[in-house]
Image 1 (tube, rainbow, N blue to C red):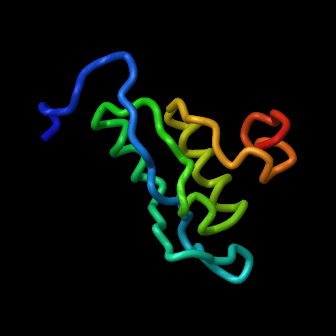
Image 2: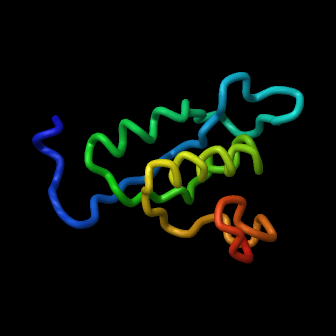
Length: 102
């Protein structure tokens, strides 16, 4: 399968979920939605397959509310992946880069 993935400067996919850290959800990190939760390593797999641009705009991106958004953005930044802007306006400032509007 890896050999069949396209090659190019931009290889794009949708990450249909949100990253949950070990022990989440819990009483401090509430669960909502139908729960497409992923381990942080899921994004490592996407990068290893060659994806370098992710869409995070979907109906599961806030399944763990703000902590899930932060978890996902932490992993995206750790792996130096590009993302399409998402959830603009949900947060006063982006939890990873501090830019206004989430």
